Amino acid sequence: MPGNTRRMQKKSLTIAQREATCRPNGGICIYHVSSMLRSVLGEERSGDKERRKPKFNKRCLIYHKDNKQCIHENLRLHFCYVSNINSWWMQPDLVLFTGDLGNENVELVRSIADLRFPKAVILGNHDAWTTTKFSVMYGVHNMAGSANKIYGAAVGAPEDHCLVLLAHNGPTGLGSNIFDICGRDWVSGGGDHGDPDLARAISQLKETRKLPVPLVVFGHMHKELAHGNGLRKMVVVGDDNTIYLNGANVPRVKRLYSKQGTSSISSLPLSTPNSEGSLRAFTLVEIVNGQLEKIAETWVSVTEDKATIEEEHILFSCGPSVSELSL
Image (cartoon, rainbow, N blue to C red; front, side):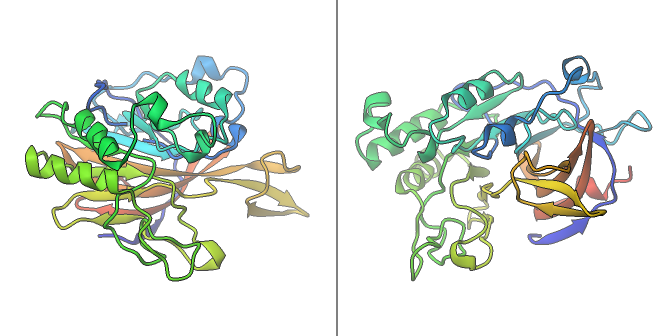
């Protein structure tokens, strides 16, 4: 049921990480991040290293800190896009970075590589404007060669695993209006800006190997359209039930600040004086027994050592959501 929006009661949650295995040829992992180093990593405070990894029941993914009880015990797979990757209020099973980490910001990429949780990263156009060519790094010279690379990586996934495709940009065929998930919004008349190599690889996987693709994750195309034309469609359910998810919610970090006794939300830089913390966007995905159950855009306020859920916008749901469970 796309489009359901919920204002959540403020509660502090901790998501305990279940043991999971990432495989080179079929690992599932998500993130779309800001291009600002501090926006992505935040500033580590003294003592964070000692308190950042609470020990909880590893079969449980949502843990209420106040009453020390697990909310539910069924095995779920959680992964997300998130801007503040140092915050331990939430620990997903897998994290996917969809690229555009910075404008060829090598130090930022190194920092992400050092993060100690299951993750997968794909680079975007901002990560290699001039210094790298696909033909040199990967031997890719055309769209057909690129499609074969994608197909070859995905086809190695074990049959009993849930296959999620990670890309920087989405595939062609999902619409050509400016508000479509990969629609051109910067030119008059719109157009389909999806990648034909990804579309071809997905088609090959489904036709030749009968391999289901429940989720395709990407970024690149910003949610807020150019020239003030509104918002982009961020989730599409295909005819064969493949779900396409765009996580490029930009900016992902908004500064909370006070001015003359009032509180406001702004997209000002993180160094703004009188700051009272930040509001950060997460895109959370739940997969249960290989079936995608929920996609939610979640806004979290981060002030000092406290992270609080402020809003949850349900983008897709086919079952009871975590927010509907009694805490």
